[in-house]
Length: 380
Ligand SMILES: *[C@@H]1O[C@H](CO)[C@@H](O)[C@H](O)[C@H]1NC(C)=O
Ligand SMILES: *[C@@H]1O[C@H](CO)[C@@H](O)[C@H](O)[C@H]1NC(C)=O
Ligand SMILES: *[C@@H]1O[C@H](CO)[C@@H](O)[C@H](O)[C@H]1NC(C)=O
Ligand SMILES: *[C@@H]1O[C@H](CO)[C@@H](O)[C@H](O)[C@H]1NC(C)=O
Ligand SMILES: *[C@@H]1O[C@H](CO)[C@@H](O)[C@H](O)[C@H]1NC(C)=O
Ligand SMILES: *[C@@H]1O[C@H](CO)[C@@H](O)[C@H](O)[C@H]1NC(C)=O
Image (cartoon, rainbow, N blue to C red):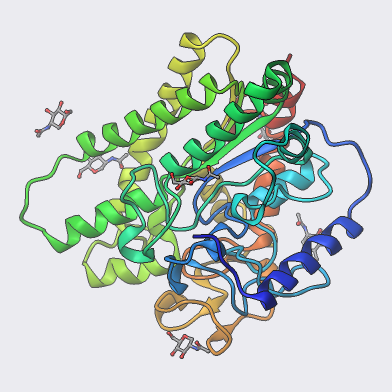
């Protein structure tokens, strides 16, 4: 299952070594961060999945064009860093937690396992995946679903726990769990609805199903010892360039020129995730969380532009809104990436991820609640 070409392996190594060299040697604020979710936070897992097709890998130019020094693709769906990287930097890590499938360790060797788990943490995220097991399979072939990601994490923690129970509990209680997932479930549902207009449907039931699986994963992570969660809700998913284009095709354009149904689902989902986390915090002793309202964050980019002034077009792409094709080396590329909300047809620019990571960290309750990541880290 795990496989990669020699050339891309070299580039990944080069990039991470350079990332280390660029960062200071400050002590990180937490021992580790474990990342779960989709392409918004994938740092290269999909490159190692033999059955994952090219649409769901970001391992070719112009991905990575703005990464310091190496300017090369690494599997990140960004012109530079993504939200997981930017948050890791904010937390003082010299390197972003590495992708799970890029790691190798000796399963029976407690020291190597403990070192691996506690160094920066591990990133399990996989582009195209979602809360539901089947999400991403049609588009991508093979992805790591949330069930796979959480399963891989808990089996590592169990392995460490069977060797040194206290070390595992201590590590997990102090570390952060960072989850950004759900957008792909919404896209796939909206496309099923568009393809089958007359069929009866129940959006509430669908969203309740998503939240039920989300709850189960959160409980699995808690049962493994995790206490501190950062959750980023799906954003205005109907406003990305691919969906603005698709909105016209399926005649579902909302007042902002975005696709109506995915935005509507996302807006309904946020309060459901909010009450899920509120409920879990009452049910599970010691659990703490920061929930980011990414719909509000996206709205703020549009109402308070700052440096980011282009919201509807992808920086790298072709056709209407730059949203009709993948970003690659032959399509249009904008000169000033930091002025764009969207890098490609689905994903934000590095500039936007940097601003978002900063908001996660310092926000006063406008976008992130009940506490921000800085407070989450400091909490006992
Ligand atoms: C990770 O999960 C996948 C899917 O559930 C499984 O096939 C694989 O063996 C797991 N890998 C490890 C190292 O646990
Ligand atoms: C949709 O599902 C919800 C939850 O199961 C249910 O309460 C509601 O009555 C359903 N709506 C319709 C129109 O069937
Ligand atoms: C979603 O759309 C339905 C109608 O299809 C509407 O009643 C509801 O208010 C919308 N919800 C949100 C959050 O926009
Ligand atoms: C806006 O861009 C300028 C020039 O690139 C930069 O110096 C400044 O820090 C940016 N401001 C923000 C808020 O990112
Ligand atoms: C880039 O994408 C465009 C649009 O899908 C396609 O026509 C072109 O062949 C692709 N270029 C490369 C180098 O893959
Ligand atoms: C949070 O900060 C914003 C400005 O960044 C301000 O407008 C708002 O009133 C503040 N909210 C609270 C609850 O302090």
